[in-house]
Length: 169
Length: 169
DNA sequence: GCGATCGCTGGGCAAGTTGCACACAGACCC
DNA sequence: GGGTCTGTGTGCAACTTGCCCAGCGATCGC
Image (cartoon, rainbow over all chains, first blue to last red; front, top):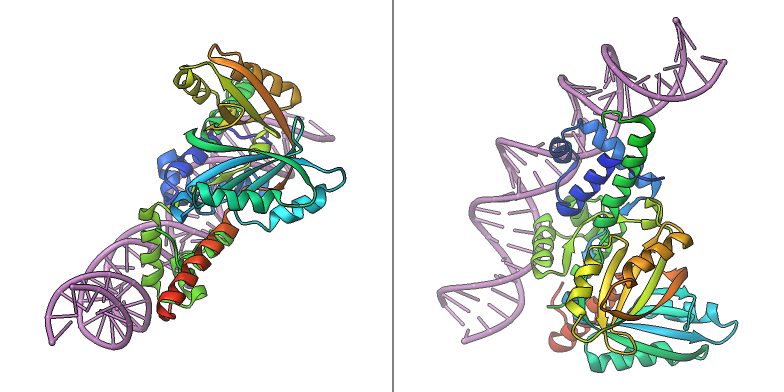
């Protein structure tokens, strides 16, 4: 577990220019093609890279309104609520959490008016006691992972350099 | 704006098997390669498909703990808070919202203990009045978009069939 | 110390894919 | 009826992929 600097650079490169293949990546990174291929395979079987699925923008799909709903669940109804929310396409993700609510889910809708429909659909369910919704106005930091990748790579590298004083990677 | 059924099938196909190329996709969809190529180009310039960046798992990177923090911001300090949170790698996304808090952000950390460090880093900032954190325990519905894609495609198609009674797509 | 193992390199190969071009057909709009 | 748009089918050169191999340096175990 963990990635080294080459892994980090590879991931950043792939994130910035997903169209480049293994060959071009090896050229940019200044390593042999086989190396890049091996690293990629390892990262994928490690689960660090889950896949290369297309990144879809809900807004462009016609769902520009986004919201978070905190749900309070009736004791023992968790499983049923999950199953229910799983069937609602507008529920993009669902977490169970500590704190005031029991669950937190991200919703999208076609408009503010449509959001009402979605919320009714989500919370108009037996096992849900209470729900509070926060509509997203702006998204100053869109979902990102690169800074974390870079930090993880540097941390790992720092560890190595401390232990072994560098190995040429 | 909006996608038709072929677009929807293409996106679903790409999401399920990202490694297949344009040629293989055209075979699976039963259309000409040029068509798939044209659709893909259109979806990308439309912004429906933002890209094909690698999907990274923070847990596999060594950050298995995930949390949401609701922040209350001192009047007029929004911009400064955003700029600050933007510099924290553990902040994966940040939204400004309506409701009790002013901002909602997703955090990750190396451990529950490490989460304390991250929270201190995030909320130990001048412009933030109050913060409440919810640690994610389970993730019954991981971030997904396919059901929405399918619904968007069907909606569009239903519209079309109503208007024009089908056109062979 | 010495052999085994691992990761990286650089090369080569056949098979497949890409990007691009073209002519053509059907549907739609004015 | 002409113009436009989208999809089809075809062709081509150029490139990339997946796979193989031999060699080499560093690390690890004994």
